[in-house]
Every structure is written in structure tokens, then in C-alpha cells.
Figure 1 (spheres, rainbow, N blue to C red):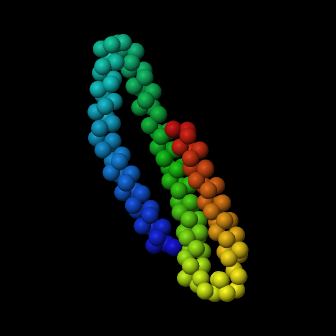
Figure 2 (cartoon, helix red, strand yellow; figure 1 turned 90 degrees about the vertical axis):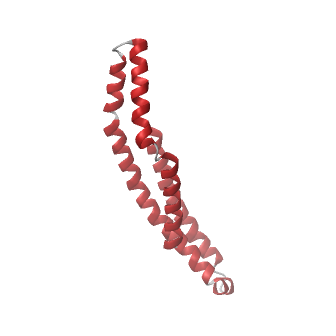
Figure 3 (cartoon, helix red, strand yellow; figure 1 turned 45 degrees about the vertical axis):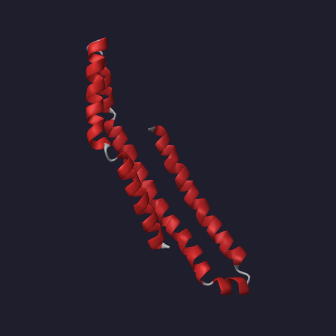
Length: 129
């Protein structure tokens, strides 16, 4: 369960880096370009908007930390759920023989419910940004 979840998480992180990693260099260039264009179009008042944009960076940082904190909790719950499923699948003969399907189903459902609670919490934090 742990290894499977680590691989899935690492793959997701690699995708995110490939998808959004270029923003490290392109976002500042884009912001400077837009501010320069706005300066020529509307004048110095655009600098107020740029200052607000820069001022919101600490808020974005706090939101990102909150998401990371929630995601760490979610990974623990997901590991537990995957571990339950793996244990059931490895002992499928015993599970079927002793009619443990309902018991495993309720354990998985409970773990998934806790995981989804954290996913919803993470998404609500993303909503803010």
C-alpha cells in the first residue's frame, strides 16, 4: 500500500512540475510585460495593482503551506485505505471463505470517507486562490 501510494504521488508531482514548473521563469516575465503595457496604457495607477499583486504573495504562500499540510494528512489516510485493500486482495481466499467481504468493505469505505473529507478540505483551500 505504501509503495503504491508513493509511486502514484511521485508520478502526480512529476506531472505537476512538468506542467507548471516553467512558471518559475515565465511568470515574472509575464507580470513585468503586463505591468509595462498597462503603464503605457493607463499610466502610473497600474503600479497600485502591481503592488497589490506582489502584496498577495505571502497569502499565496500561506495557502500553499495549508494545502501541503492537508495533503500530508490525506496521504496517511490513503496509505491506510490501500493497505486494507492490499491485505484483502492478498488473502482473498480467506476473505471469501470466512465471508469477510462486508467487513473489509466497511473498513475501506470508512477510510475512503476520511480521505474524501481531507480532499474536500484541500479543495476548499484551493477555492480561496
